[in-house]
Length: 113
Length: 115
Image (tube, rainbow over all chains, first blue to last red; front, side, top):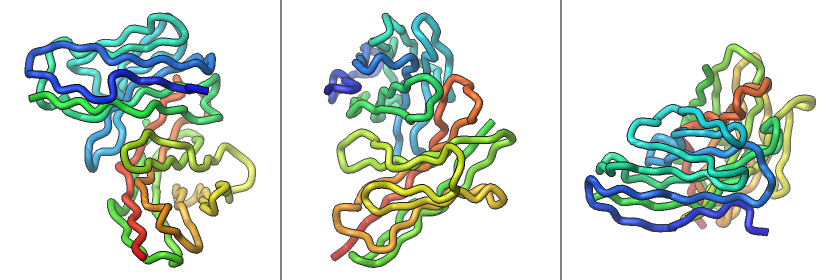
């Protein structure tokens, strides 16, 4: 009954370091998403994958890359972290047609110093 | 493109009082609408949704929202709030015809229920 699992839960990076945020879902969902949450700005879409083998940019893709490794896993990579990327990152998944909404992971709190 | 505006960033209210969290959206196509709730230090959970049919939708914990197409609104209401309703609430919209299933979120409203 795991749903969407994100790792790590917390991370502190130095400017210029790289890291990958991991996300896995066990609900056989086709679509997966990465959002960032910043105070007063709600959630903004970084990248999404409508189905296995496809990825597309969202509203704020600069500085990020993604990989849809298989149907279960969708990772987000920061190649050279910047302080502006300090945020809480959420992964989500949905079944076909979005009618059931998203299932969210518990988030990764990232601080870039 | 779609957009969502939540008209109040913070709503303080006393326990057992009624509350309304306002949400307006903009879209040139028909949409699905959602309300999500985020308790402190947790992810978002689906509270309720409007897909079609009755414009009044309800959640299991006493919240309701009404879809008003003419006013492009989807306000969330509860007649009597509890301390446990303290959380951040997000309104979200997506085109009803699948465009990748992307949800567009509002800025969020912090509901603070005081004893």
